[in-house]
Structures are given as structure tokens and as C-alpha cells.
Length: 154
Image (tube, rainbow, N blue to C red):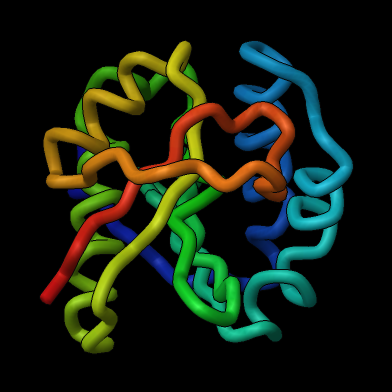
């Protein structure tokens, strides 16, 4: 087995961004209109608006994804997914650490994320790397979110 690589967005990877995220959304929730918009056109709604998408690649197979979406006043860690057959191997942690290092190199002050408390493993991962819970605004762009977390970088 070769080493896990984390690679930048390429148009040919857009289908993995969509499929990996749709898979977990349908398993735990449902696909909201905001999800569909972002996932269907990552070039326009993430990359062209100043955001970033990274993929976990193992043996030439895309097995995970994460994005940092520019929300104008903050960057949101979002759309993180790992293929079910590779879950439990620390891929999510590697993606998370990559994003944190990336943000620090960009001199960002923080990273924000939205989640749901029933995603126990994800919440555990976020806390493990230093995210803390903050107040969730009433009109979050995700209907399903019931927790907002912040990682201070500086």
C-alpha cells in the first residue's frame, strides 16, 4: 500500500466531491438544496469564490474529500467525507490536520464548521484537534446543523 496523498481540486475529481458527500448525507440525513448547489458545482461555489477542496488519494483512488469554503467573513471547513471502506483508518484526521496546517500557512485566524450532534465520530474528531463549540446562529445555511464549532489558529 502506498502512502496517502492529499491533492488539490481538479475538475476531473468533481464527481468524487459530489458522490462521497451525497453518500454520507443520504445515510444520516438528506441532501439539502444548499448541499446540492455546492456539490453540483464546486468550481463555481467553492474554488471561484476563494475556497479550496482537497482529496485523499490512496493507490490512485480518491477515498476522501474536504473543503474550506470562503464565507466572506470566515472560512468554513465543510463537505468532509471518507469512503465507507476506508473509514476508521485515520483518513479524516489526516484531512483535518492538512486543512489546519494549510490555514495556518495562510495566516488565517480561525476555521469554523457546522455539524450535527448525531455525528458522534465527527464531533469527537473536531474536539480532538481543538475545535470548541460556539453559539449557532438561528439562520444557519444548513437546516440540519445543531452545533457550530470554532478552531482558533493564532
